Amino acid sequence: MATVKLFTILRKATGEQSYESSQRTVGAVLKEVEKRHGDKVSRYLKNCIVLVNGQNISYLKGKRTKLGPGDEVSLFPPVAGG
Image (spheres, rainbow, N blue to C red):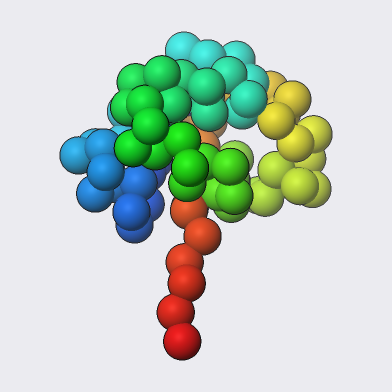
């Protein structure tokens, strides 16, 4: 199982800090998060920075990045400020 960690507005919207997932790819985890929490998170997931074990999935295989036992998926929604 992989640990999925939610940060900033995702944490607030879901009421979850983290949970365990049996999904095998990053794309499946993103769909799982959306299914678990619906519209209140879907808009944030589109532009999330996604890390697997501290590495941005842009440098891996994107949403096709495979997950294994002990992996950690971190979801950081975009932050705006000024």
